[in-house]
Length: 72
Image 1 (cartoon, rainbow, N blue to C red):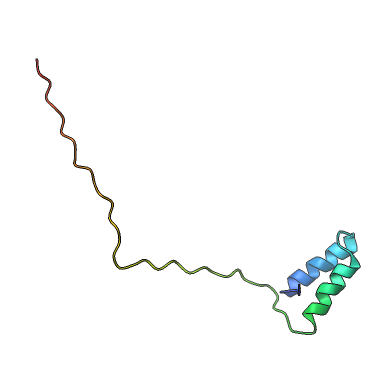
Image 2 (image 1 turned 45 degrees about the horizontal axis):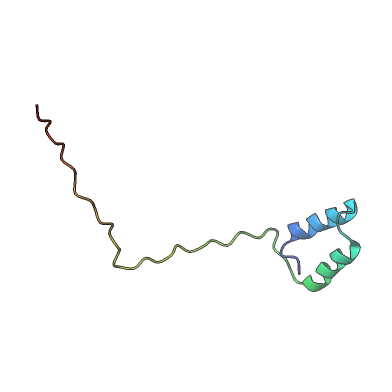
């Protein structure tokens, strides 16, 4: 899997120095990235709001209950 940003590449280099990932893993990612120019950071993709249909279903309302008068 190629790197997506410069920040990600730096993070993997840090993990490599700490010994948390193997040099083979780092090299594999680096080769797949190639020499392309990477952005400093990658922003999360925003999700679109789901389209709602023109006809919205309305919930059926129960009739209001009347308080019954107590008989004495």
